[in-house]
Image (cartoon, rainbow, N blue to C red; front, side, top):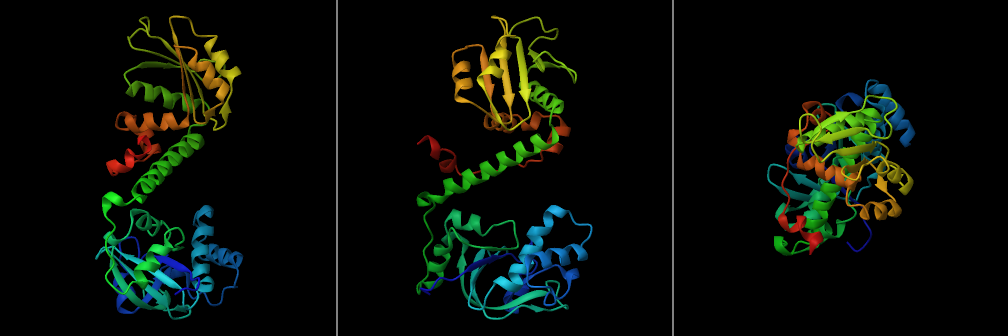
Length: 338
């Protein structure tokens, strides 16, 4: 296997419902029962997109390229001799095999788009690095394995039983943890940028400050004099600290002049807070560091605050940003500080 080969990854349905089909009939398969036989579709991605949309006219347009693309790759890009990795949910193993047949349509099966395969080896998931497992855990049903392909090829070539990678030595755990955190951060910022653009972002930040123990007064839409929120601890808003907050729902970079304008509206006994989904220029950061009563919160810092106080957010915002608590290895979480 010294020649360059393509290694494909494939899932047997979200719940592993096609695993028996894969193993007993020695095939890999995709669903999409209603789409019919794909041999008659023109051999181009555009033709597959048009055909897919004709079969599923109510589907969201944004999902068409990915779905049609997977079908196109299954029919036209997979070649006999290519290798395939199939993670089985029930046995918690990874089946490795070689493609032996061209595309065929089997209408009697619930996964009718099929190719025959010779299964060569079954390897426990624990034998692979966390990075390799993360890659074959792709959200797509069909995908190419690139980053950790060598790991799967080595497992396939090994004549003896492969040994598990010691968890404490698995350097990819930290990488996977970082990817999960970055994906979550990107999701939160994207939702806020799209769904709370403009004044609604001030309402959101006001609610976030409330989860942190502050009472807030959000300025109504329109001219606000540069102050979007006033936050305070007491019921009437007389007792210090009084925090004047300006927010920006844009994802661009905020410069020194904008920060200076906010600070010009902050009395010596008050505090200024600027919250943005984007970033701050180095000059803006330097300006804030010289002011003990001024704080800047960029998109990354905002995400951390949201995660810390997520459970206390108003239900409408939890519905807007649906998150589920997960646990990651402590070694991965602490890797950046070492």
